[in-house]
Image 1 (cartoon, rainbow, N blue to C red):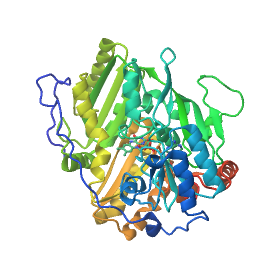
Image 2 (image 1 turned 90 degrees about the horizontal axis):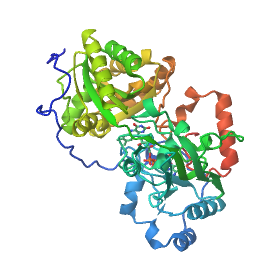
Image 3 (image 1 turned 30 degrees about the vertical axis):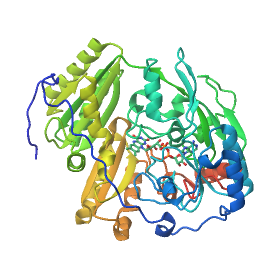
Image 4 (image 1 turned 120 degrees about the horizontal axis):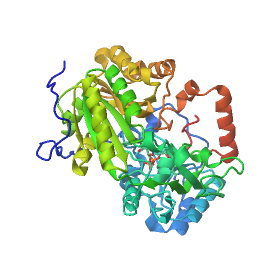
Length: 506
Ligand SMILES: Cc1cc2nc3c(=O)[nH]c(=O)nc-3n(C[C@H](O)[C@H](O)[C@H](O)COP(=O)(O)OP(=O)(O)OC[C@H]3O[C@@H](n4cnc5c(N)ncnc54)[C@H](O)[C@@H]3O)c2cc1C
């Protein structure tokens, strides 16, 4: 049922109350059980970390860049969702490529398994150990190496935090071509290793297009210099693409060269209320038709997602309650032109009854407040009991079907089934919240959800990767020939299998 249907003038004035939302509260979760006890998995034939190994690492890095204290290890052993918990006894924090090389070479020779870790914001369990893998954290590899202001090419170390890089670029009137809710913690190396998609992909494309070069350390310690900054370079195989999205299983990324763009001069954000998903699609097609060149983001939020934002985060819709919400961002170089285009588009959508209500702003504080609702949704759902999380992509006509099917399939077994995401890229995050984890419920969801995704011609991982949690479903997405080739590549680059075992290919 739609409440508060009214057609307001679309632009927010300075005097409206919608200029901010309550600040998010943070919460404390109890620690999860050890992954090795929760999942039926056999430890690989790797050595355990002994005193002689510790001696080597201490000599290489010094005491201050090694963590062995149990309570200090927790933050590295537990994943962002607090569903998984590794049993690593050591974190290493190299500062240079040379140190990474010596660590990996030593681990390879001694059959010690390694889990590369960036900001540990991944949501498929790729960044946390399953058993006692050595965690190699890139957090101290956080220097900018070079910024070519004319070409916009940024070269930086893998441990640079995304938000820091974007703020650095802002001073030079440039923008990082990737943005996501975890920007305050995730690392560029982690972004590259997951081929992160995020909020601006609609405009800037994915990292396979934007990453110009990489430096990678292979499992045996060999440093692979692929750090080209050229846009065109067809000299043989494009090896960097092997490492983009390989989730730390083929090599450890130490440096990244990335093509950044000029910072747009004008940004506008519209937040709209819609009657049903069909209208969402019509609005998207119209947005593409009317303003493709300035369309940067087209995000969708359904009612249960908004209810969750309200209940768990104290955030809410600035325009009242609707069955669906759409957040549109445009960016461009001409304020007046962009504003006119967006207003014209919104007026047409209102006239055609695609949208029921909306608000639009070009003011930084206001559009940040609107974005906050969308960006903080993941922080809300981890407070909603236990949440089964999925990240699918579909042809647009099938985009929301799975959510509806799942509601029926789950019945009273779930508390909430909800979907939100980057509709502009066909990417939806589907969440099923239950009171607490229950294996019978898990079996009721999987593999049903993945099989249906396949039936709807979708992907079971649009942007988060396979990590640990989805690895066993790889065969649903890839032919046996493709999996064999992936295994051959892994065998060639990491014959002892020390790099992020139990992930992706398992
Ligand atoms: C609130 C929130 C919002 C999010 N929004 C998005 C989104 O919009 N789009 C999206 O794509 N993702 C999103 N994510 C997921 C996550 O932030 C991304 O996957 C991100 O790219 C992970 O970066 P990280 O540095 O935290 O990597 P980690 O979580 O530390 O690691 C991720 C994987 O990469 C590997 N890895 C990390 N660093 C290296 C390295 N230097 N070399 C080799 N392997 C490495 C790890 O072993 C692991 O397999 C979100 C997560 C949260 C918590």
